[in-house]
Length: 164
Image (cartoon, rainbow, N blue to C red):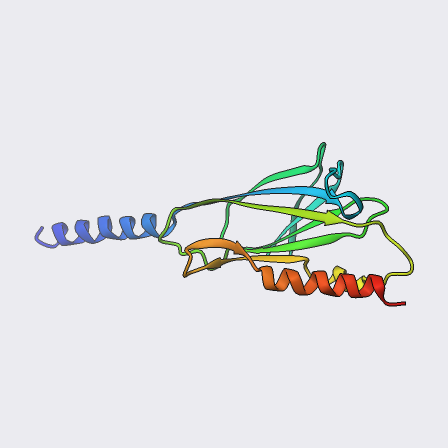
C-alpha cells in the first residue's frame, strides 16, 4: 500500500505534462485577393486549395474576395490560389516551430494579388516557389511573414514581365 501514493502522484503528473504539452494551436488566416492590374478592386470567386504536410485536405471556391481559414495543427501548410485566366500563386505557412507548451492564438493577415496570364511572360517558377512564407519567429514570439523572401519573388516576377 505504500507504493500506491507515489504511483498515483506519478500518474497525475504524467497527465498534467501531457495535457500541458498539447496546448491547442488556433491560427486564423485572413487573406484578401486582388488583381494586380487594379489593386483597389477585389478578385472574387477564386479557388483555394489547402495542403497540410504535402497532403491535400480541403479546397473551396470563395464567394467573395476574402479567405478566412483556421490552422489547427503545428504543420507545414501550402495554400494555393487559382482563378481562370490568372497566374496561380501559393503561400507557405510554417507553424511547426510554434512552441507546444504555449496556447497560441493569432490572426495572420495578407493581401495576395493575381495577375492575368500572358504567353509572353515566363513565370513558370511560381508553380514551385511560393509568393510568400510565414513562420514562427522566436524573438518576436509571433507568426510573421518573411518580407525579404517576398520581395525577392516580386523582383523575379517583375523581371519576367519586363524581359523580352
